[in-house]
Amino acid sequence: MKWLILSLLFAGCTSKDEFQIWQDKSNIKLLAEDRKNKELELLYLHEIREAMKNNDEDAFKFYFNEYISIPRIDVPEKLKSHPNYFIGGEKVKY
Image 1 (cartoon, rainbow, N blue to C red):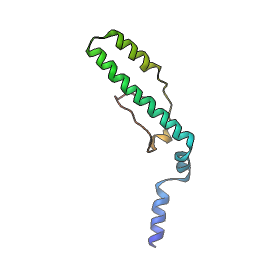
Image 2 (image 1 turned 135 degrees about the vertical axis):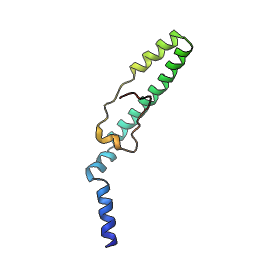
Image 3 (image 1 turned 30 degrees about the vertical axis):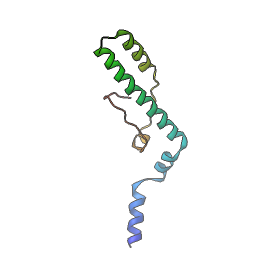
Protein backbone atom coordinates (compact mmCIF):
# COMPACT_ATOMS: atom_id res chain seq x y z
CA MET A 1 0.00 0.00 0.00
CA LYS A 2 2.83 2.38 0.91
CA TRP A 3 4.51 1.78 -2.48
CA LEU A 4 1.26 2.35 -4.34
CA ILE A 5 0.74 5.72 -2.66
CA LEU A 6 4.34 6.78 -3.33
CA SER A 7 4.18 5.75 -6.98
CA LEU A 8 0.90 7.63 -7.48
CA LEU A 9 2.37 10.69 -5.79
CA PHE A 10 5.43 10.74 -8.05
CA ALA A 11 3.44 9.89 -11.17
CA GLY A 12 1.19 12.88 -10.55
CA CYS A 13 4.05 15.34 -10.08
CA THR A 14 5.15 15.44 -13.68
CA SER A 15 3.94 13.95 -16.89
CA LYS A 16 6.18 11.98 -19.21
CA ASP A 17 5.78 14.65 -21.89
CA GLU A 18 6.82 17.38 -19.46
CA PHE A 19 9.84 15.35 -18.40
CA GLN A 20 10.90 14.88 -22.03
CA ILE A 21 10.46 18.59 -22.73
CA TRP A 22 12.65 19.44 -19.73
CA GLN A 23 15.35 16.95 -20.72
CA ASP A 24 15.54 18.00 -24.38
CA LYS A 25 19.02 19.45 -24.97
CA SER A 26 17.73 22.03 -27.45
CA ASN A 27 15.32 23.35 -24.80
CA ILE A 28 18.09 23.54 -22.22
CA LYS A 29 20.27 25.39 -24.74
CA LEU A 30 17.39 27.78 -25.51
CA LEU A 31 16.92 28.52 -21.80
CA ALA A 32 20.66 29.12 -21.35
CA GLU A 33 20.72 31.56 -24.27
CA ASP A 34 17.59 33.30 -22.97
CA ARG A 35 19.19 33.66 -19.53
CA LYS A 36 22.38 35.11 -21.03
CA ASN A 37 20.34 37.66 -22.98
CA LYS A 38 18.27 38.65 -19.95
CA GLU A 39 21.38 39.07 -17.82
CA LEU A 40 22.86 41.34 -20.50
CA GLU A 41 19.61 43.32 -20.54
CA LEU A 42 19.83 43.81 -16.78
CA LEU A 43 23.43 44.96 -17.08
CA TYR A 44 22.62 47.42 -19.86
CA LEU A 45 19.59 48.75 -18.00
CA HIS A 46 21.82 49.41 -14.99
CA GLU A 47 24.33 51.25 -17.19
CA ILE A 48 21.53 53.25 -18.83
CA ARG A 49 20.29 54.34 -15.40
CA GLU A 50 23.83 55.35 -14.39
CA ALA A 51 24.29 57.32 -17.62
CA MET A 52 20.99 59.11 -17.02
CA LYS A 53 21.95 59.87 -13.42
CA ASN A 54 25.28 61.34 -14.58
CA ASN A 55 23.81 63.13 -17.62
CA ASP A 56 26.19 61.19 -19.87
CA GLU A 57 24.46 61.28 -23.25
CA ASP A 58 27.16 59.32 -25.09
CA ALA A 59 27.05 56.45 -22.59
CA PHE A 60 23.25 56.50 -22.67
CA LYS A 61 23.17 56.22 -26.47
CA PHE A 62 25.78 53.46 -26.47
CA TYR A 63 24.09 51.29 -23.84
CA PHE A 64 20.62 51.95 -25.21
CA ASN A 65 21.72 50.75 -28.66
CA GLU A 66 23.33 47.69 -27.06
CA TYR A 67 20.17 47.03 -25.08
CA ILE A 68 17.85 47.14 -28.08
CA SER A 69 20.20 44.95 -30.12
CA ILE A 70 19.83 42.00 -27.73
CA PRO A 71 17.67 39.34 -29.36
CA ARG A 72 14.45 38.55 -27.52
CA ILE A 73 13.70 34.84 -27.43
CA ASP A 74 10.10 33.70 -27.41
CA VAL A 75 10.20 31.01 -24.73
CA PRO A 76 7.26 28.58 -24.93
CA GLU A 77 4.94 28.65 -21.92
CA LYS A 78 5.75 25.00 -21.19
CA LEU A 79 9.39 25.90 -20.53
CA LYS A 80 8.60 28.77 -18.16
CA SER A 81 8.07 26.27 -15.34
CA HIS A 82 11.46 24.64 -15.99
CA PRO A 83 13.93 25.03 -13.09
CA ASN A 84 16.51 26.63 -15.45
CA TYR A 85 14.10 29.36 -16.63
CA PHE A 86 15.37 32.82 -15.72
CA ILE A 87 12.57 35.28 -15.11
CA GLY A 88 14.68 38.38 -15.55
CA GLY A 89 13.81 41.58 -13.82
CA GLU A 90 13.11 45.26 -14.02
CA LYS A 91 9.44 44.42 -14.65
CA VAL A 92 10.18 44.23 -18.37
CA LYS A 93 8.03 41.85 -20.41
CA TYR A 94 10.06 39.56 -22.65
